[in-house]
Image 1 (cartoon, rainbow, N blue to C red):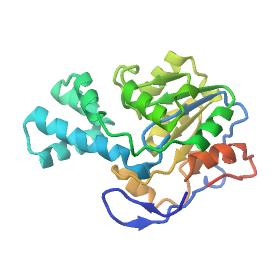
Image 2 (cartoon, one colour; image 1 turned 90 degrees about the horizontal axis):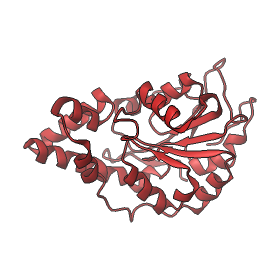
Image 3 (cartoon, rainbow, N blue to C red; image 1 turned 180 degrees about the horizontal axis):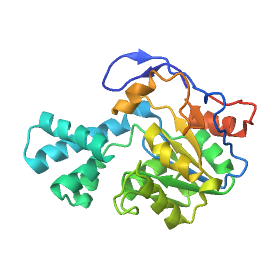
Length: 261
């Protein structure tokens, strides 16, 4: 995968770098891992296919229609709720008492033709020892459709979606606690793969090994701040620009600090 990434919406290019933990930071690896937990959007599939841009646009459309406001105002509300509540849906539920089923059905009615078949990713996920789960703030059906399009759905034991967590979203610690309880996961024997850095804080605190999968899709202030990072924050143990490559080589790294980009 090219190191040069196009930032969605900003129309400029930058060269991302694989950052390392600060000297002296706690290192966690995968020798005990028997539960492999993956976020969906911009993690299991490459952000460059711009699939989530479709979801993002349809969120704005839904809010404009639901609240009877111009699209520009709806987009402002959408991003404000996202930053304040963790997800746009959580904000709509809290402020406007929205029925989440209608929202999820609308925003995930998207064209999946842009999602590539991923035989190399499939091969690496199939090699992972133990259990494999998808953990998403989206809907079960959305995750199911995308994973099927990638060609990896049958490799996963289950999908833990926003409804399964009773609409408590990541990055809330309660969302991870609900997922762990629902699927009987031992945090100290689990690894979490995510494109959003704030979504790795709670799993780190619970004892998981955390992996940040770089995403070129930028729509949160934290992602802008990441550009100034010189090293990984302590709650992120590994970073990669290429999930397939990391599963192939990076997860076999040892405490001498080898890791895959």
